[in-house]
Amino acid sequence: MTIRTVLAAAVGLAFVSGVAAQQPAPPPPQQPDFSKAEVKVTDLGNKTFMLEGVGGNITVAAGDDAVIMIDAQFAPMHDKIKAAVDAATRLPIRYVVNTHFHGDHTGGNANFARDGAIVVAHDNIRVRLAAGTLYGALDRLMADGLVEEQGREVVDGRERRYYALTDAGHGVVAEEARRMAASSQAVLVRLDAVRGMA
Image 1 (spheres, rainbow, N blue to C red):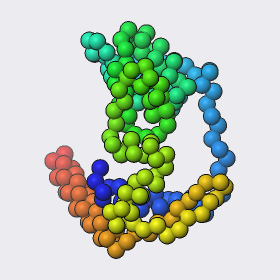
Image 2 (image 1 turned 120 degrees about the horizontal axis):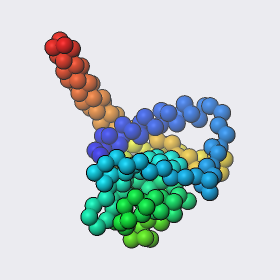
Image 3 (image 1 turned 180 degrees about the vertical axis):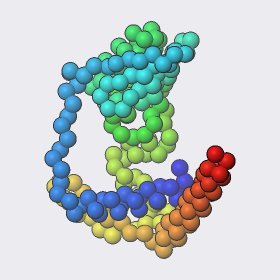
């Protein structure tokens, strides 16, 4: 992921956060009852399976001697997921690949790692999980001179930080907007060409 992509995401998040801050806080989400959750296994063919439980789905690909698993759902689902993989493949889980940082995809990482699986993910996922917040990415943007901290406050027991784009940050956002507009235009030209052939 380029610094431009991170900056564009941070700007978008800052905008959404500002709008969200003006809205009344929603009630906290209901936690699922993991004791009642079941894992449904669907055989996709070629020793590949989809597991459905609580949260994001899991893809399991079995090799000759081990399994690679895409995402790990929530930590309390570990035993049920492991049993489902064992029932479907009779092989150990050697790798867990995280697609992104949400807890319903990464919550089980530690348990599967304790079982001997190697957890693989993009470095930005590691950074985000280690930081526990988006502040890790914002700190990197600040170190690169693209944003500057404007202040901090504690709201409902949680620290909030406020950032502003620097002149360099504005330049990167403008350049990324130009690049995205050019890419969008190229897609539209191709779509028009495809429509013309139909």
